[in-house]
Length: 366
Image 1 (cartoon, rainbow, N blue to C red):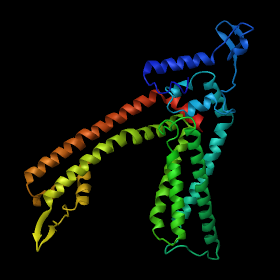
Image 2 (image 1 turned 135 degrees about the vertical axis):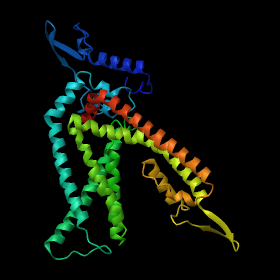
Image 3 (image 1 turned 180 degrees about the horizontal axis):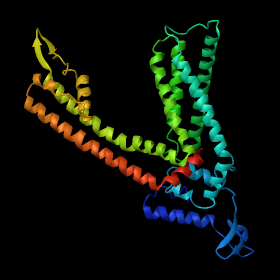
């Protein structure tokens, strides 16, 4: 049920799969001969109230390839967040979260805060000059060296845990970052960049400082992962992932085409190209709009409403330039940005209706 039919994505078929899955978990036979085949065993009934036991064989995660594990990490299974609302999976997840998972989650959160504090302190109080630096005989320098060792050791642990989780997910199906663990890639990139910094530091490259700021920023961004400890705050992290990896990514794909295309056209109108002595020379105006990189930056300012039209006095064929500029503003500032806002509003509304299902999926991943 969970693997052979996962490629069917139509809404009626997904609903049918959930109903079949519920029927399998609630299967109950009253005859003595077939009763051992039941998944549900009713102990007593008093009017509308009843007490039932469920056979958890192959359902809980204490067995390999369990149903709960397949549903949580089986990202291509249709409606797999809704399946976690079916009893006894819902009660099982809630009980595991309240009994021990929440305590382990808070412990990991405190350990990560300690690691982040050490990593930030090491980055802020680094030495200037060409590495590697000798260890000087005073306490602060010894503390700095211990902090560097702990930072690298933590990166190795993060790298190991990330690769292990990827192997767990791909053993069932293809990873869907948006639904399972969107911060997994951030942790991997953070650890990998820090290890590269260590290699550059050991080779005596001063450029390691420019690369060090990237894992530092990603380490603070990864702190948002622990928002999932709260149902309300956890949804903010999910919404950010969906907007960045779907809405914003689609927006940037179209926007970059328009930005580079119009920048190349505008740059040709501001560059005075002449042939002197058999060489091709370019006369650059005072604002350097003949440089395509500078033009891209200025057109980006138009997109966010910070553009300046004073430089248009020196361009060639002003009428053509104004047509290009107006077309660019209409397509990006008016059309694309409003489309992005509409897509983000739709994402927030859709996820708000699925908040409980998605949070249960996040709890299962923890």
